[in-house]
Structure formats: structure tokens, C-alpha cells
Amino acid sequence: MARILYGIAGEGMGHAIRSKVVIEHLLKKHELIIVSSRKAYEFLSSHFSNVYDIHGMHLNYKNNKVQSIKTLIHNAYKLPKGSYHTLKRLISILKKFKPDIVISDFEPFTALTSKFFNIPLISIDNMHIMTNCRLKIPKRYYKDYLAAKLIIKSIIIKADYYLINTFCYPKIKKKNTFLFSPVLRKEIINAKVKNKDFILVYQTSGSNKKIKDVLNKINGKFIIYGFDENKKEKNITFKEFDEAGFIEDLASCRALITNGGFSTIVEAVYLGKPVLSEPIRNHFEQILNAIFVEKMGYGEFHKKIKVDKINGFISNIGIYKKNLKGYKKEGNPGILEKLDYMIGKLNL
Image (tube, rainbow, N blue to C red):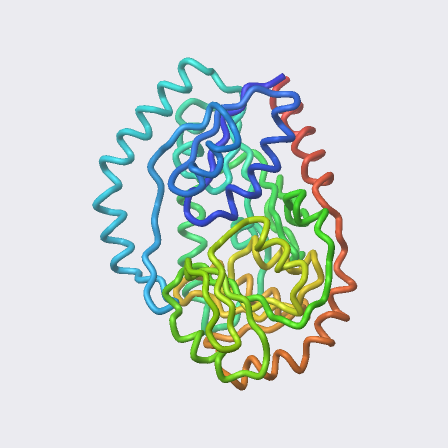
């Protein structure tokens, strides 16, 4: 048995949903303390004990775009006080709990304290594909790519092992790096796939108001999540987020229109649903996910959704469905078995 400190990034829900699966596996053999922030903390604390709230970064959105200056000012204002209290809490946990290993899903404070206290660190995320693999990035995004790499390297300074979730498999360029198919919640693995006559639309934030007007002009049915409302408007059904309802709609839709969030895309790919991705602007991780979707032939990447783009996507759904049949559904055992091996190796 090992004592494990597990840190999970709090921005968005993808890190938390993935980590829940890993944590459930680890708790069968090991003792864990979990730290996270924001919505991820709320989600994880409702499922596990020994979950602690820490400071986390926040992204500001407007009109489907990350507001870089506002995000920077907000986080700079909160960082000194938040960092002080977080590090104080983590040091207290470390002294009492004495972890043998730290696992970080893109959570910077646990990664940092692992270095201060010389504790082995395992990174589990989808972000390090940018730093640990060879990628071909379109020239127009290359500066964003370099900036993203610097941020990733500053958040996880150096891990002993990197377990990277991905649905695209570029060449690895750094040792102790391993690529695995994405960790999936059991509800997705067990979902009954159907093909109904609607397209599912999921928005990371409710700031993309213009998408409603675009969808109203298209001959088709749409179900939208992301605007926190329940109503019907012409050919659109708006739904407040409900995990079970969303999974059922994802498993039943013809295709998915979404931003570039990793978890939503990989769940759609696993269920064989073509993806039209409109990444949030200034958010390179989402842009990269959209690039991968198009590269693998699972759907399309558009900087801005317009009527003609959606109609073109709809006309190609059959092609993308055929391509998705070639996606290898490996599930979770591979990455979990590798994690068990690494924990055993580091905890000798």
C-alpha cells in the first residue's frame, strides 16, 4: 500500500471526471488525500472523503473567447493570497500524511510541493502531448503552441512519469512518457448507442450567444447544453446540465457540435459520434483537440461556426461515422495497469 497525494486542476470538469475513475481504482489498494479547486472540488468532494479545497486558476470568457487580459488580472490578484493558504495547507498535509507519491492531473501546487519535499511525481493528463511529443502545428497557431508549452512546463516542472490521455498518437520525444487511450467513466463505456435525428450541441461557457441564431437557420433538430436553461425555441431544445441526461443524449445523437474540450470530444469519439469543433478562441489546448479531430477524420475544425459550415458537416456525417468505426476502443485497463506498475516501482 502507498500513501498518495492526488492533485486535480479545478478549471472545467474534464480533469475531475477522469480523475474520479483513477481514484476509485487506487482506493482499492492505497490511501489517498485529494486536493482540488472550484467545480472540480465540489464534484470530487461529493464522491470521496479526504478531499481538500485549494486555490485554482480561472479563465474568463466573452463571446466564445478567452479574455486574456481579464484572466491575467483576475488570477494575479487572487494568486498571492491563494498561493499562501494553499501551500500552508499542503505543507500541513504533507507533514501529517507523509505521502510516498504525488499524482497530478495538471494541478500545479501538488507538483511544486513534490519537488520541495523530494517526493516522486506521476503526471496524468492530456496536456503533456504538447511538450513530450512531436507535433506538426499549422504556422498560424505556432506562437500559441509555444506559449502553451511554456505554461505547461511551469505547471508541471518535471515528473518521474507522464501518462498522457489521447485519441491521436504522435511520436514520443521524451523518456518516461506513455500514451494511452483516454480514461473514460463507466457511464460512457456502458452507454447504449443509438442514432436519433438530432444533433447535440455542448458549449463550454454560455458566452457563445450567436450560435442560437445560426442553428435556427438550419433544417434540423438540435439539443443544447451550456446555457443553464430549459426551454424550446424553434428547432432547438435547451437543457440544463444533468449528467445522466447529457450522456443519454450524447449516446443517442447523430453528431456533436462543441468547443474543443478534451473530455467531451473523446467521449463522442468513443461512442462513434462525428464532431464539429469550434474551439474557444485564445485557448490553444482546445484548438489542438480540434486539429486532432480533423486529422483523424472524425469530424471538422472551424474557427467560427456558420450556417454553411454546419450544413457541410451534416452532409459529411456518413464519412466521419465510417472513419470512427476504425477507432480502437481500448478502455481504461491499459493506463490503470501501467499506473499500478509505476506506483509499485516508486514505492519500493
